[in-house]
Length: 293
Image 1 (cartoon, rainbow, N blue to C red):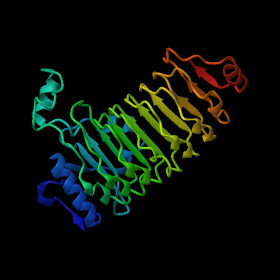
Image 2: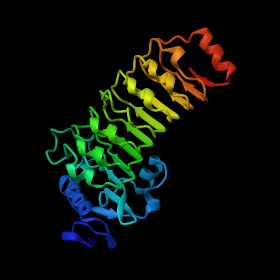
Image 3: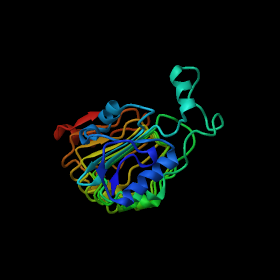
């Protein structure tokens, strides 16, 4: 189907994508009441920090995507939680970001089920700088079989959908400033290609044992959260190079289960009640592993 200024809601160059993806784009626009912009592929490439820096917090184009081989390949949703009126009030510095009671027009409670229509989506980035309400990610997100990078930044999300465990092609998963309290037990069981997992500024206290199934994991970053322990199953993470556990609530760790085979950096800073045993400290020095404590 040819896309070209459908209902004056979508404004970008003419591209050809499947009708099922057109419907999903329309649903997103209706749910969020914002407009899409087609952008060059290079605009949505690179680290997510760079992506947000380049495309910024534009109120005119908070929904952006790129196309490759006639499919939506990358999708970025920026700051969907403020209505235009509240956005400009905050931007001028007249007041702090609004709470849910301040503006009934702000935010949305869920993404549409049709988000799962993007069967060839490679990267999905959802970013918000507003801390109110909660968002629901539909189970259909598990239909994104080709998804390799998922970034959830600043969206108020308490629990992940269990279907996220169906994303077997996922290589990078970032969950940052999302109020996350719980991770479903089996969510990591089939993410065999995951190389980077970052969960920062969350409320989680426990990591599921299935994290041991992430055999290709190289970067594990779980910091600024409320973790009290790690499962012994982490001993199977033989390819782990960087382990960041700083700013948590650890009293102890399964020292014998921390796989040192490939480890290069271990960050345990700001765990005030955590004591590192002498034998473990000796092993780190012997293997020339950088310890931050």
